[in-house]
Image (tube, rainbow, N blue to C red; front, side):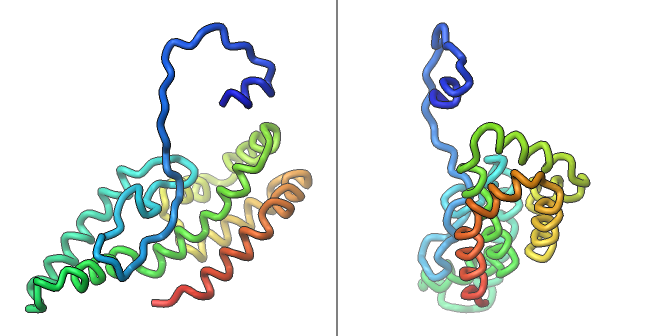
Length: 185
């Protein structure tokens, strides 16, 4: 923030309070075969653009509860915590959700844009049809829809933004495609 204020030639007269926090955005996908069930901010349930996580985490709670109940009524050995955790994680992180999370490579691009590039990007983003940006921000778009969203967005940005996206986003895009190709149920 200090660098941004300096870049905009804004002089801070006084600081009322100094607050320090970290908002994890995006984040790694969970390791499915681990004893700890991946849910919340530790495993990418924080939306990479908005920082919101409560709604996504609360939406996951019934999945976790149902998976545990199904495991317990199945008659499997309840003393085997690793097996239970793995089953819950598998139910929670279906391949569609993992692919949706992988698409968030775009945050890498946004973080590399300067102020004018960021403004250009978001002006275009919010000029798209609401179904695209509503769907993206609410995590209701899955991979096929996210690809269409990305292509529509790329088609609507200015040539300057297109060049910035290609320059800053080629490697993250290749990494995303590689990760998607390796991800199997």
